[in-house]
Image 1: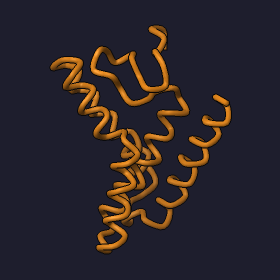
Image 2: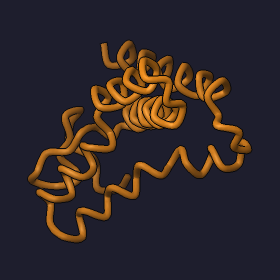
Image 3: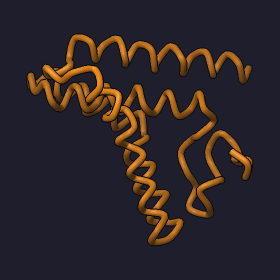
Image 4: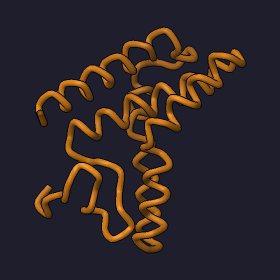
Length: 120
């Protein structure tokens, strides 16, 4: 079952990257490569404490928020909002493929997928 979920996440990440081709905001590919990892800046919350870190990380890695932003952007015809939502969805799915899930407030290593290994 775990491999089925991984394949599902790969498909969502690939779909998000594909959709960004149509909602690129005129930015070059190298800019999108940098922006793809921008949600990881949210990990800086862990410098304050694990609770703030988990909240900030989860805010930028929650697929429900990504889908909501995409939908609002689509219906209101706000291209920037739609592209942001698509990017967050693709990034979040990519993170899940790599084994990073939404964080619990106890530690960065405690995720909804399972405990991260210290050597990752």
